[in-house]
Length: 161
Image 1 (tube, one colour):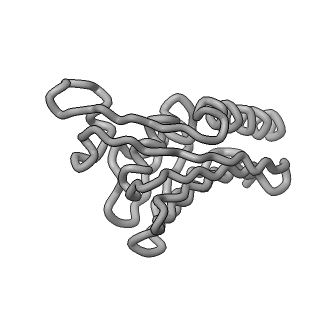
Image 2 (image 1 turned 120 degrees about the vertical axis):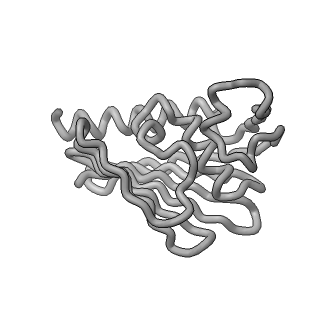
């Protein structure tokens, strides 16, 4: 795939994902319960299988083909685990979410997809900060989660190799 086409599609996907989160601010109501039998329940860690509202503020910081395209979201009052689960659910239809583990690994981990030549690396910077690198042929996506007193900030950077 042509690298310019790849990054143009990645930028378009990122823009659409941000727009789907109600422009710059939205509230996600997660009403998945263990007794519903919902297939989505397996996507969430067991401690998040309750009714929770999370306000999400997103900013598309833009970018270019040389440095990549950046999107930042704040998941207010959400833990790393909750933010990861919601991010994964919101992005299961694109490469940002479909290669992520169903539950957040508790320690550094690496997963490879031989059929797709894709590698996903989870690296904990500390107990409140995690970097996930999705390595694709012709590009890389870096997802950074950082917990603070407001909630968890998640930054997604789509960049060339």
